[in-house]
Image 1 (tube, helix red, strand yellow):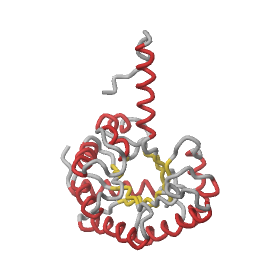
Image 2 (cartoon, one colour; image 1 turned 90 degrees about the vertical axis):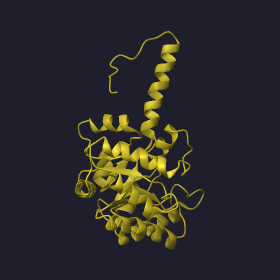
Image 3 (cartoon, rainbow, N blue to C red; image 1 turned 180 degrees about the vertical axis):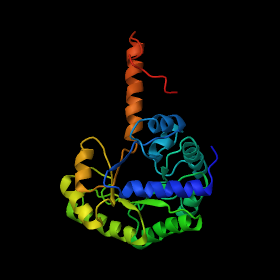
Image 4 (tube, one colour; image 1 turned 180 degrees about the horizontal axis):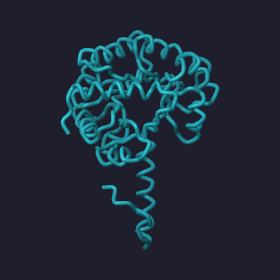
Length: 262
C-alpha cells in the first residue's frame, strides 16, 4: 500500500476526531505487522497505537530508547503500511530529537505519537513538545500529539497531591501549545481522573489501563478521551503462549478454538 501525503493528512484528521468524540477511543496496542492486522480486523477498532516497550522487547532491547531509532521507525512504518486505519506511535521521548523523529515517522505514515516528558524541567519539556507540533506543521499534517507527562510514573514517595498538581500543570502547558490530548500513565483512581478531566476539559485526558484500572465505561462517563494498554497486550499474548507451551510439554494439545490469524 502506497501512502501519499494527502492520505496521511486525512488519517491525522480522522485520528484527531476520534479523540474528541464523546465515545471513548480505545487503542489495543500492537508491536508488529501481524498483531496490527489482527487488531485492525476486530470489529470496533477505529485506530491503532504501537507500544514502544513491546516493539523493543520483540527485537531484544530493553525499554527506554535502547532500540535504535532506525529500527523503531522501520517497525512503525511497516505497521502503518499494513492497515488503512490511522496509526499513532509510541516514540518514547523522541530519541534525542523529537522534531526530527516525528518528521521521520510522518514520512512512513504515522499520524500521531506519544512523547514522554520524563519529568525534565517544564521549560525543556515545552520545547520538546513544540518541536513535535512544528514537525507536523512543516510536513502538512495536523499531527496528533498525545503529550505524556510522567508525573505519576516518576512520582515515587512524593505526596500524591503534589504529583497530581504536577500532572495538571504540565498537561495544561502541553494543551496550550496545541497537543491533542495529555497522556497521564499510572494507576489512577476516580478522584485523580476527575481532577485531571476538570483541569484539561472533556476528551483531553488519555490514560493507560492496567490491572486494577477503572473500567472503560466509567472512564467514558468521566470524560476521558482515550485508553491504551501499553505492553499489557503483548503480555496477554505471551501469557497465552506460555500457558500453551506448558500444556503441550505436559502431553496436552493445542487449545480448542485456536484461529489461523497468521
